[in-house]
Length: 90
Image 1 (cartoon, rainbow, N blue to C red):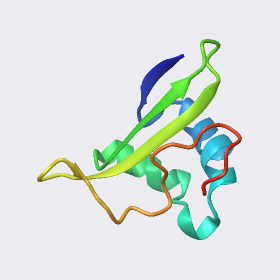
Image 2: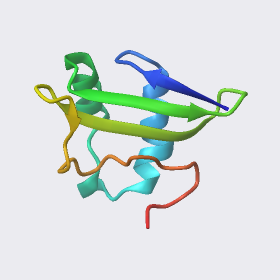
Image 3: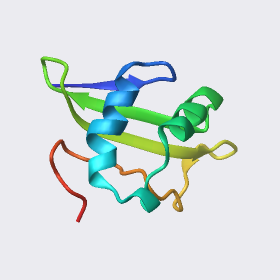
């Protein structure tokens, strides 16, 4: 198992969004893939993933950052701190 950073343009991003985030959150609590991509490109969003040894995603972490203080914003809805594969959010 390994932890990787996910950047704008990374082909893993779509898999993480579609396979882990979409099944785990209702639509009104989930940001779009385009929003995540834009945030990664602009530097306001950070993302990482946990991959099995074979490269299969197990969990994802996505957060929006406040640029001045480099602190995660508390009001970011729709993006989990982590969502294990196959698990639903409580």
